[in-house]
Length: 313
Image 1: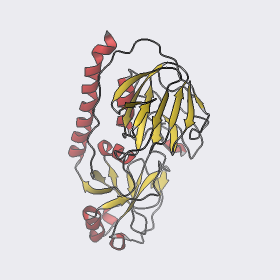
Image 2: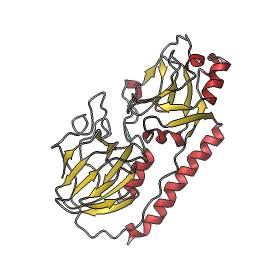
Image 3: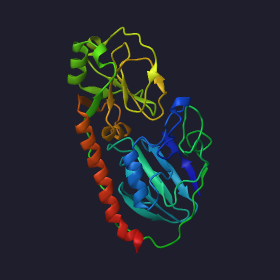
Image 4: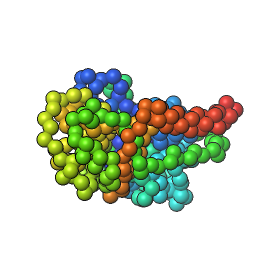
């Protein structure tokens, strides 16, 4: 078991998401940084989809009630096991009554804590992920709170793995596919979108990242459209000209024009952006998007090959 002493800004249970229910209005949910989630699980020889803890910003404290092994990935939030510093990209044995504490940091927004064997909780629609809007999955459909008890299976065997994992490089230029309403927007609007430096608005969350910029007047519009399907990565352009990048907990339909869609290889970057971080966008071809995805997949494959000798001994 793990006891939550302090949950920090937001602490939730997440796997890789709820797939196959968008036609029923059910969001995907799941870890916003899927690559950090997978890497953390692989470092403790879990299945990729095993549930982990997603921690936002930091300021969290967890007490372990049994022996286990953990791995951290994602943002470096200055974690410690008791007084020993621990780092993203590595696995660590933990003894009963030890405490994992997070301060805060500057290298991202979300850290992922994988526990040997995964976090235990009931599945809802095939997933353990917490959907905060629908109040399903995870720990009674809500973010974790002080004194909550998280179920895990103890692990008492010696832990000999000393392999670590690099973080995929961060990007400030986010690559996009053209959206279905690209031709409905004016050339001036499209040009402004491609040449503007956007900053992350503090009113951002697991539903979506709101973007601020200085060209909102050029990007304002009066288009009125029928609602259509949206998905994580869809970039909506509201009438005020300030784009919204939809994330895992977003609604399943929307009526704002879709100016683009973030390619799969770059979507995880939005899990780690912090308020006032700056980004720009560029449209790429399907071939470029596929190559970017293949590069990240190769990163995961190399990690798997490197770890295999530990799991087979």
